[in-house]
Image (tube, rainbow, N blue to C red; front, top):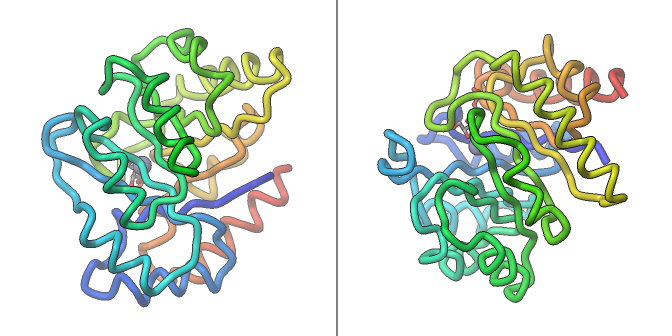
Length: 219
Ligand code: DX5
Ligand code: ZN
């Protein structure tokens, strides 16, 4: 299934609830929520209180991307504040399998994110138990960066692994995705598209609808 997950990192935080209603109304299926700790990545974004507040105003699927060290310390907290999908970084934990199991025990979907320079093979031991693989298409940490062209081959490689094993794992891409390059990542095998600046700058509803139409047309 083709899914759009707008990243609120690029939103106007003073009117976040309103902007989320706009992306929902325009047809986005997920909401991408970037949590940054100033340690795994240089920047700090926001944490549980913001997510809990948003949970009260929206039923959309919360796709939480944890860019934090020792994600195992916080899984319960993120479930409590309303996460539906929890994606942690392969590079941030010593026992990814235990973390996937914990997320599943709590009844949520588990994702692993992999940075642009981490070999794709590193994901193989976990692929069978994962709901979603997030292939980062920029270095995590900031919105508004350009798409790294080498990512296309990495998405293709990930798609190859998943298809070879007959799995249904989603492939999410995150970073520098616009209406002009989304066809490239879809063709390579991604099916869950994250976009921040391409959607939240200007007319949000128009941007989201335009992106959804472009995605449909690139099928
Ligand atoms: C980057 C974040 C992304 C970011 C994408 O570390 O994980 O989700 O918000 O922003 P754009 O689409 O502007 O590259
Ligand atoms: Zn993200």
